[in-house]
Image (tube, rainbow, N blue to C red; front, side, top):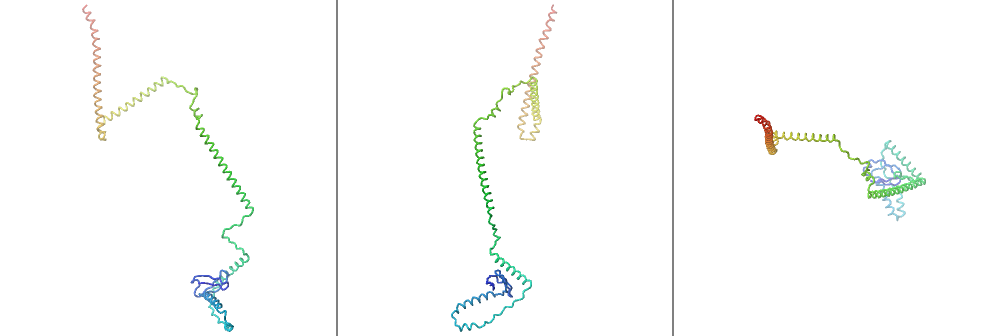
Length: 290
């Protein structure tokens, strides 16, 4: 549906359900004029205007008689019954009309439109421009100073690296001095005293003796508990049998050697006792002969 303002002729396209069947009051947002709009009233007025324009264009060659006939008063169109507006609605419409009128007057008084929503700022003053130029110059100088400092640091690092490389090529004097000692600093080796030697030998003998005793005790325990160990660990039965047999053979060999040693010692003791008795008995026989 098209709405046409009767005051300024502004046209608006609205939905059909905006205007009810009994009509309603509307207000032009362009000029602020308020009027009662009936369904189809604006379209009928627009069609009438267009038909009048067409008739004017087609009847440019009419005679005066026809003009006199047309000058007769036209039959007035029936006016639509306007329902009475509620007082609150009329008050709201009046306030809106006054607000629109005040806005138009302000626009006329101040032809320059201000758009605050664009976020535009006032042009900077010459003083602020000079201050900004000074700050820019300082920033540029500071950046140049930082670049010069970085270049100096790079050169110093390169010089230090070169010095370090030259230092690596030459022997380190401090390291050489630390490895070399004067004759006065060299400590002469001192021979241990007899007491220290005796203590060392005693500790060595004691350590070796107890080590042998511990090993013998372990081997003897294995020999005694070979059957129990073989039952607990069947995989060691063969090794334990060989170990027991070896110990038995050793015991037999040791017993044989002990017997041979005791027999030889007894034989030696008998042989030493026999000549002594012979030497003692010989003089007695001589005396008896005399």
